Image 1: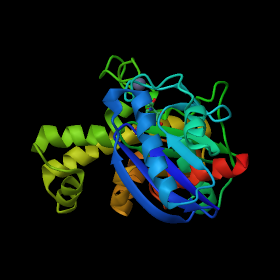
Image 2: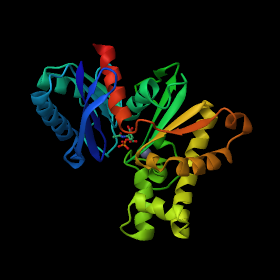
Image 3: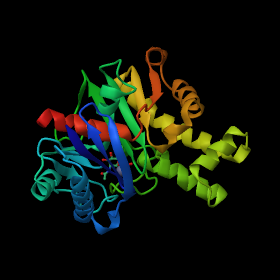
Length: 298
Ligand code: BMX
Ligand code: ZN
């Protein structure tokens, strides 16, 4: 069987063709037309899926998306203003009617967690947390090999823990949320503030070369990432946290800093069992996890 799979984020729509083993046969991406609103974003997905259908005999379409997702109905329970007017859309129904194919919809980080669980960094444990540092910060709680969804499919919105009361305005409507300080986007904002145009890759290259300002910017940000993790670790006592998002390409350099910063803040009983790992499958995990959810429907 082959599937079209999408990962809809506030910044880009990544998509690909996958088989039932989670193997990626083709992939590409485009910019999310988020400012045009959720309906237009789904139209973008429809158009791409129709083009894929012209080339591949798809058996279904799997969608990983930002926002809280009722994965039984395929609806967006709630989305922040990072995709305006997304809340309430029935993505599954819209796509099934347009494409005449079975469709599964899952929150992006829940999908990433499932991708890592079945085919990546979390294969060896049944309980773990997954966290992506992207445009926002998404989270997933996996217990006994299943994503914990909460009372209204909204559990795991790690990005909206309060890190600094009364702090920066968040697209969720509150102030001082974790994702305003510890997402990749927040690191980009810091880079712009200190260096003007530089990219995150340049920042890390400079920091690794012992550029003092670059190291300072990275360390300040790491300290905010770790501050949020401290709360998560004390609540869940997880054996593993898988970290995703663009910055995961910084590998051990970033992981070592994070481990030091988190360990300095948590009690010894939480330190011993805790492993931090970067995502193994990167963005592919979102596509894979969405396909895994689709397979469960077929
Ligand atoms: C936001 C929220 C989460 C999502 C997270 C990561 C919306 C639209 N998004 O906190 O549901 O998991 O961002 O998303 O409500 P990304 O855009 O960083 O990939
Ligand atoms: Zn928020």
